[in-house]
Length: 170
Image (cartoon, rainbow, N blue to C red; front, side, top):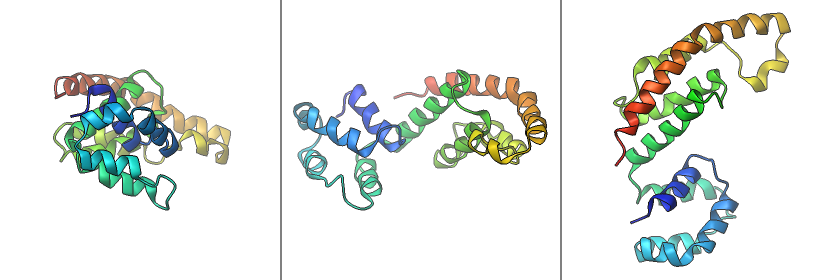
């Protein structure tokens, strides 16, 4: 069984917060600990995995998902995203788009519909920062005013959901 720190590293890989090369380096650096925490077959798979092969991330994700608690991962990644929202470390339009996947993957049971898809539906025609350069500055300013009008409610809902999910940790 993985200790919480090691489990978080696996979650970061699945969440794409960690590159394959960073994960591979981490695996070799923590060989002894992982060998004691993982069943032999899983440990061997990770230590012998070809991290440079084509589609390595997808294959590794399949391997890892076979021995982690998917619901626990979905709660963790949702809390990570909600934390970034509450602390205003992510563009709100982009955040609303990213909330949809965990909503459906958790069978719609932990995220309120308003937060998971409601805000996205009213902000779906708003550009994300990487698209700003494609917009007329005046039109962009008008669009971003819409985001501002929802910001306070979105942050409040994100905080409440984060607190709720914090009580759902295993």
